[in-house]
Image (cartoon, rainbow, N blue to C red; front, top):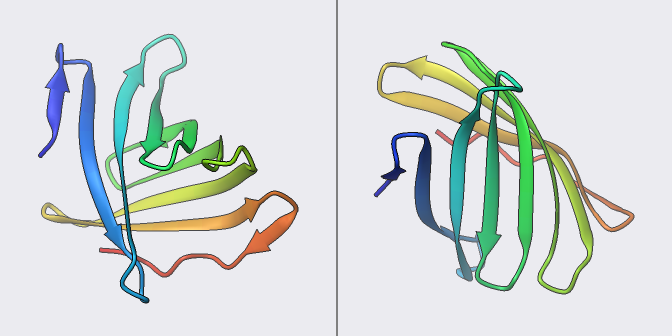
Length: 111
């Protein structure tokens, strides 16, 4: 459940399940950075990994460039897209993903 932090940030706890049944969890903060006129987010995973990024979000879509590290300190990058389907649903996808020097496949779209 999102928690509004002093009406400027959203906090979200999440758990993801992979195809093989393994799970991972973490916390994400999302906030409006007024002087940049864009949204920023900070992600913290249970294994010690961190990611942060900023980008734009309008009424129909958004994009954020993300950089971070895995729990063991390996650099990660991605571009995350968000597209509004209707008043109740969005589509999210992560593309141009890397871990260290290895390129990862784009994720599928998640509604």
